[in-house]
Image 1: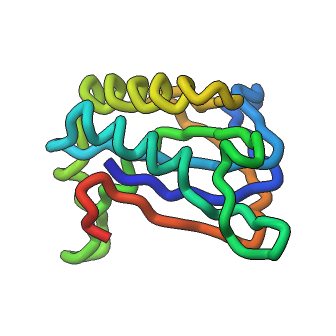
Image 2: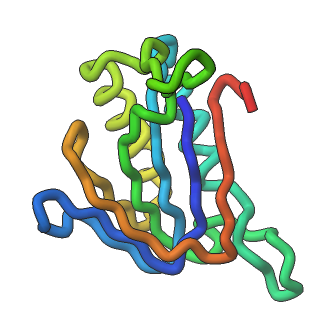
Length: 149
């Protein structure tokens, strides 16, 4: 699984003009499921997301997690993170999981981060979504359950 994690002061997702989820201070997580991913990948990324120290402590160092600051998560499914653009100009998505598998692992990720007790909001799987955010910092981190980067 792959994730783009952005530290935000606010973020929201809309489908057909309707707000499905919004958060204040916390993390926006764009999440993709790969064809070879399993349940342990969802658990690993959930734990990594919750413990990622990207919020500043009293000394201005990024030393606090979203749990430490009692922040929120907005999680958006985004299969395009598996787009491979090394050949030609059109991305290939052959490494992305098929929708049924992707939805199962996306849901498992949501359940895993939900166990933390922090506020969780999400988009709608396979929907065309409009995501807006105020990236604080800016701070953006890439995560990969296979540790490819």
